[in-house]
Image 1 (tube, helix red, strand yellow):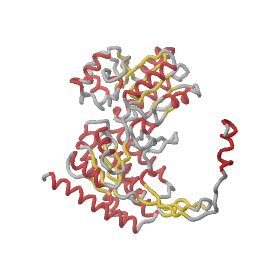
Image 2 (cartoon, helix red, strand yellow; image 1 turned 90 degrees about the horizontal axis):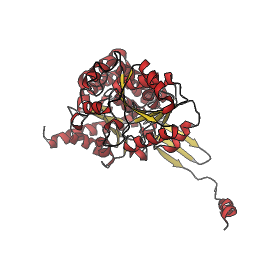
Image 3 (cartoon, rainbow, N blue to C red; image 1 turned 180 degrees about the vertical axis):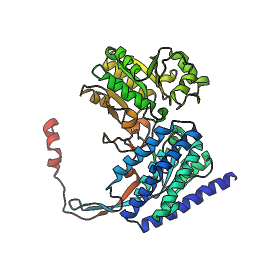
Image 4 (tube, rainbow, N blue to C red; image 1 turned 45 degrees about the vertical axis):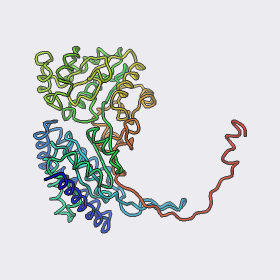
Length: 467
């Protein structure tokens, strides 16, 4: 197939999606939208299909591990369905007699969704469910390694659609192994774009001319201060860092420990399988041979990682992750950035103020706007971080990977795409969720005038500074 045919194929797919979406909206109801969303959710949550998708994802991408992907597919989708329960996305969603405004929910149209190889099942499923709940059609563009998983997922979705009487053209994908040209075409002809993944794709989304919801890079830094429950902090960081072999953008990449707690925290990490390594130069050489992340180490199980880093026999048996003592921050110090592996950068801070400084420098280098964390029993310190660091989220005393993208024990919406605000070059600063997949038409009626006098508006200002 030549380049012209490639682009024509994308145009035809989007045309079918657009026709299906118009029928879906024309014949729509809240019941229909809810049924379609439930069909797509069950397509990935049904236990046998969930495991098949998880096994396929690990086998074809080489990233993560099967048990954690099963958990991720289940919990992310279950949490999303909890968030969607009762959400009104069809018809009148707000009627305010005081303002005279009635709002009617309307779909965005055809969503073009670019999804990463790190979550080739959970991320497209999340986007598909959100799109259908709000009356949209969606065309998914997976990464080349994620194609088999995405194909299988859409096959399951269409099987559920056949049972539920839903048009399969509402959910489609860019066929084959994909290409930058075909993905670019989707970015240009869809009505709205959702992009999770490489920053190259994010930049292309924002320059495509199509309204875009794209998210920034992660590089989570977490403070452990002298007031923290060190055992609890170490256990949560270990579970979070090791989950799905650190494929999540919310996985801790650096832990900044105040000096008064440093030695005790290192001991606490050791108790939960964290091996501290002081030779950062050898780790850097092994993790970035030739200046690129070592594919033998990225998102691999602990034993594979340890062999790839040349640490076999140098770390204790049962090591789950490696914490590398380091000080440098910036382009010349790759440990200060995202590592996509069971490797933590470990920084020692003089005190809490110094820890805030280090986290600020880490975020300025990479991950601005995404999220930071703190383990502390001081109730004022999270506010210090929130007012000091260019971040959209401060996660307090929680396992970062599980908390940032929605948890049953916090109020964040379940999502696999975290907006990073202007700090990360994004149009949103919240977790991508169903409200981002809907727009409204407003009926505006006349109401009694509410015009204030000039005196009412400026009385306080005049009193403070004069007229």
